[in-house]
Length: 93
Length: 168
Image 1 (cartoon, rainbow over the protein chains, first blue to last red):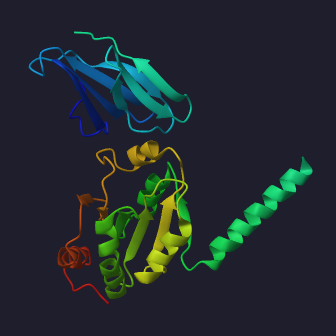
Image 2: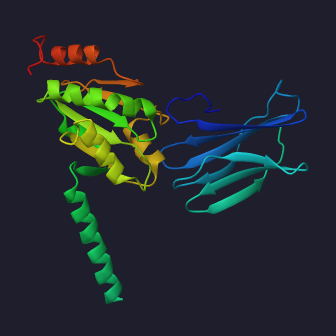
Image 3: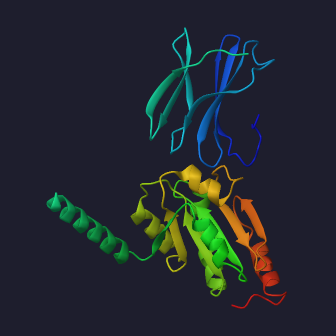
């Protein structure tokens, strides 16, 4: 898990809480590609899933955001190559 | 088609003329610029300062960098504006002029993929400004974020010149 690795430019964390479910998305850059990794907790943050990669791009991109319509949680992200993406997140633990 | 091309060439020529008419020469800082800068710096101390128009500490501090440059006219001071493209070049130039830094070595971000340029420049940098990197004569790199301690920078330069006072 690269979170905290000072050489991978971990940035732009975004947290969304929905009842006991808490989602965390953040940006990572490995020198070539920007990745949005997501983690989820179903017990109000006491324990967390492993991070999984929800989206990737190889050009410049906006900050990631998490949004909910009350039924599902989505990653909302704009990147230059791919354009706007609204990606439904599946809770993995 | 050729008409479009001619129009594009005229636009480029006009843009160049506009840039030339401004006080500061603003060079594009790209993916390999840091590597090139390091290679060119061998044997000579260099101070590289990253700043941005959206960074209030940077703007407050720039006149002090201007005064520092005036104190050390023989020191290579490099200023890199890190505003994302498209930058407000006129405002960048006006800001440098106002701080007496138009004559310094000035660069602006020359690539829209800022993360890539930043990674190639300084892997541990998450983009905060201001940021300053010191390249010592022996190639040793020092970095700090936030405002500068200019007395400390004076000392650093003095050490770089073998302990003798930095020559004005």
